[in-house]
Image (cartoon, rainbow, N blue to C red; front, side, top):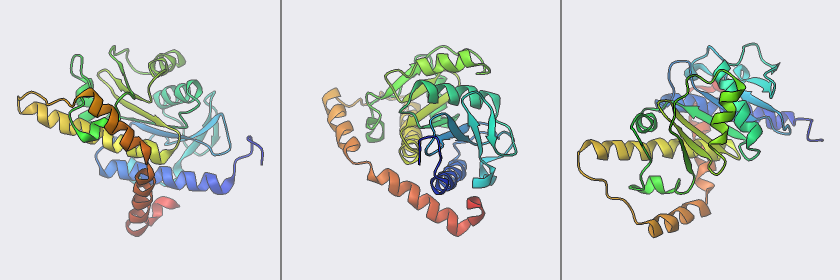
Length: 248
């Protein structure tokens, strides 16, 4: 099989997993209406990616609903269209960062709350936050909706040395080499932001962890990401029991 010939079994598995994470993200309250987007490079391809289409709620997403688009925005497979900002954000990040085979963009409550604070930053004040130490970048200037390639490129340019981006007044982008790692990171990123926002709401100062402990703890967390794969497998099992139609 050449790099330009997708493995259909792998594509099917990728669609099932992507639909599972979209449904689970809805259960966690990470979505917003029918907005926000998850994308995943098609297995065996370098310029086509799976994307949740415009108009469907995450809670009703099925594997067969996912669309395939190329880097130019052409619909390769599917019956629905890509939401414009989804295409311009995701396609430009996929193109500019070959390691970003999975791109997740959400307006989740607690991470977005940090995006709404002047100079808001993820602080190293919880164990959950430490998996992201040294991995986060910030776009501090809101520039309107991402409705063209130039805005997608501008967003992508903020991620040169990071795989997670906080977008001012907007939300977050999480990227990784595969879906399991990206979704696990998204889950814990929102939890870390939740811990921080709740702590900040007490009016007491945050107890920031010393930098050397941050680095050491980050290394410990990064050394074994097997739980990320187990997390996705557990989500898939639960959904297959409770709402098996997601895999159709």
